Length: 411
Length: 157
Image (cartoon, rainbow over all chains, first blue to last red; front, side, top):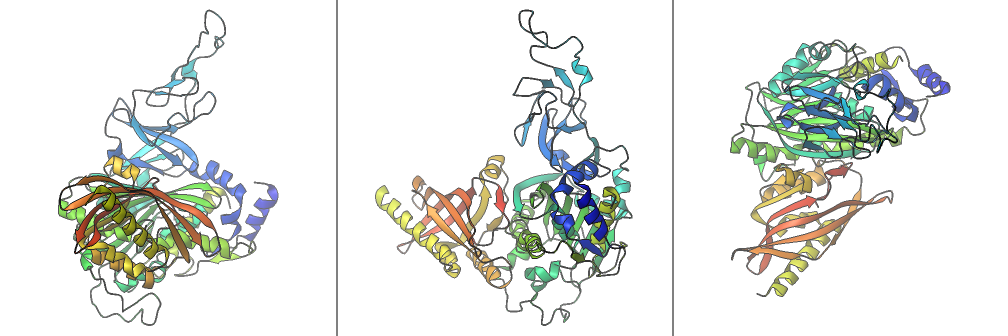
């Protein structure tokens, strides 16, 4: 990023966390700085679910920001993760989404790595017929891929490149940890994978998952069918560092509720011909109808009725983000419960009744603010802090996101 | 009925199905299915991996009608239209009651600002039943070649 851009973005940050200058979503130069300082910095990046790589040699490819990464189960049963880039010429080492391997060999010139990402051998190191080859000073053991430090919580695998990152428990705080542990309290099983290509900056989506104010307003289906109204019990807990949150909506205690009268958000004429989609089991006995939690920078996990899903957001460019949806069940689901999940998944994902709008809303911001580099996004709902609140009519978790982003980015 | 006659009936059904969606007569869309149907949108990769979930999953015609109602009344998305280009079907099985067929398709999406995109390529894996002279879908599994979807999927495929 050139100095003029830094000055422009810096210059526009008002005091406090209630205003976000639009250039932070628009400036292409920030993407590189975010990759280096943020995604490769003191944060925990979602990598995979442990049950996806149960056996020695099982691997998956994923991303840390824009960096391609391999996650693998090693011979010792541990999990390793390293940059998916050959140390020779920079080609991808793993070319598919998942697989099983004894070791990894780059297709370009057959440089070979062990399961932990250490270079073991290279083709024609001594040359051919006494000619060519690498200099004697070259030793494979001196070369290793960039490795992530791994932390697993309830079978969900995170990685960090920084020695400064606190433990995962300290990073996400006790409330998010408790919610994560409950949701992942039994062995998770992937039951679907889809990617929604979002035409917007990744931070607009990171804000959206923390935006407890919008859910019942943008998503008419939520309020109409009382899945999520702000008048239902619940609240939002934000970790002390601001980075992570969990928002909870409880089942309504009474049917009468006039707080949404006259709003577009409720269509009382809307009745489902087949209400079986909303037949839910209270799986955890906690009356939670919807819960969203986030782990900075790129991970969210939700429960909505019996829907369970992980969302990973991967920046592809300043105005393009891949939103990876990982639909989940428990490995020991009864057939009846699994069927409920399949039907209720109509609520989530790219075609979800209460999520499809999130696919386009970030782009509406991009287009609305295209000529407003001096403008700011306002975040004054629920005060100016990042504390936990017993209401969802607040933007506290979004302010928390910016608290962490600014601390890491030095802005 | 000969295979040729059956293929002609399936082609006619698919043409009518595409026209109902592309002409924004979505309320007619559930009528192409039997009451106790299955309609699911998934991808080749999910099918290969044995993943059961789809991005749309309806196990009754009433659920299809509910989706149309939600699109009309609840969901927010920018004005857009599809153009289905449906290829030649091939018969894959017949068990006396139902006929199975597979049909490739493309959907071009046109947005209100004029932006045109090749939105989805895929195939329909169908089970069809003849009832009172009308062919209906017992099961239509929409198998998209890609698991990636641009922005959102509102209108059915």
